[in-house]
Length: 255
Image 1 (cartoon, helix red, strand yellow):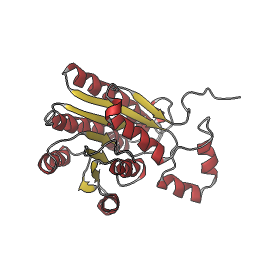
Image 2 (cartoon, helix red, strand yellow):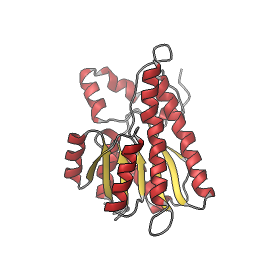
Image 3 (cartoon, one colour):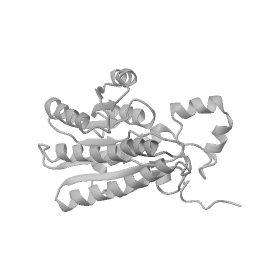
């Protein structure tokens, strides 16, 4: 690897599986010092030990949990260069089936958790030794552009776009060199999706058809976009939406 993130301090939420795991592994290979933040202590610790990251327990919905993480970063690292707000859940409930409890639970993780992550990142990055500088990356979705029936998930991922842009312009207006961008994966072949395909093989072709490229994305392809946005190469990129979905949101439905 090119060590594009050499010695940069990064926090990745939801890093114990899926896209988050892929980002942790790639960041470590690029030379970053990574805190893998997740509720899954067993899985997260195993991945962290394997790739040279450090596990930290984090409930993204809890202000106290974020405060503990902020204190740890200050004491152990003295700075923060990259925050990846990746943790997220789905409900698979449409507007007629969703309950207030399910709605609020999903929003607390997918939207409030991202907001708290942005707050924490700015608080730390303002105090960086080289001045207020850093990169915040929020994982949204192709559903930020095109809706699916899961009403809470779709709404939360659209909300991540507005949150990201608001954070980006706030930091710029304050004179902070703190960038904030969103990544929008489409159908991505994570371990969970692989399991679903093993149980229901027809899922594979359905997912492939979502993209004009007629395939699913890989975790590594999404992680590559995160590396770019985290690196100094993306120094003039803020408030942007970066799709990694094989053209899914660009093509009109065919006859």
